[in-house]
Amino acid sequence: MSVNDLQHLKSVPEQFSPEEWAARLDLAAAYRLAGQFGWHDLLGTHFSVRVPGTTNQYLVNPFGLFFEEITASSLVKIDTDGNVLSASEHGVNPAADEIHGGIYAARPDVNAIMHLHSVAGTGVATQKGGLLPISQNAILLQVRTRYYDYGGSGIDSKECAKLVAALGDGSVLFLRNHGTLSAGRTIGEAFALIARIERACQIQLAAQAGGEIAPIDPDVLARTIERGKRIYADNSWSPHARVEWAAFRRKIDRDDPGYAV
Image (cartoon, rainbow, N blue to C red; front, side, top):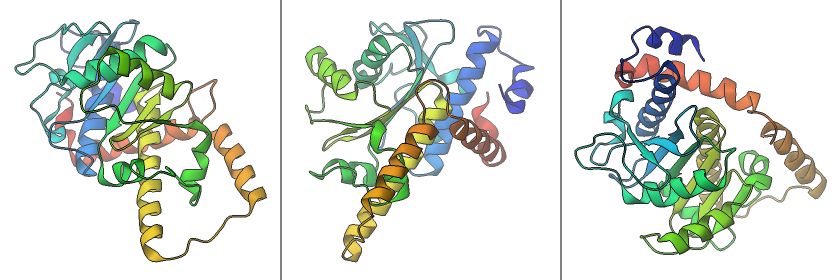
């Protein structure tokens, strides 16, 4: 728990435990940051975090609010069966239950999910070759990246099972012709992953528009992929992601502290 969390926890709303309030602060901060970075798609995408101490409940944005309007107390609690457990004027986006609930049920190691329809991420998701190992950001995540073929705008239980199977043990999923998704052990890790993917996709599209792409020596490529395995190891929350998320939290506390209510 960060110093900022401890400061905010001095006035935890009585309806939440300190642990849930800390998770709400992290998730609301992620939404506000994503809004700053232009990652929104009207009301169409969603991030979530598992409620601490539970296996089948998670928090997600209420339908009808832009990312920059999300606050810690406005987040909606839902379970993996799709039952909405807290009040929301417009409910939640059905895709939140379809995508997030399915992954949480199948992956007990995942505690946070971010799903985007950004221009760069979706642009690369439409390409047959997917994420190309042409930049450092892309190479570091090659071993964690998976692909899911487009199944339409509505995802039923059968299609959800396909999506979960496509993610497998990965951390990043390209939903072809649709968008991107990151799955982390914390919201900080999920955010660090999606931020790196966004940058990699922006670089790829710029490089493809700019001319012939320089090849990377196969030995260098292999060594960098191995380094990516160490940075985003399976057995613990990546220390790189921990430090990155702490810096992001300081940024949003400076720029837009209204999320923490």
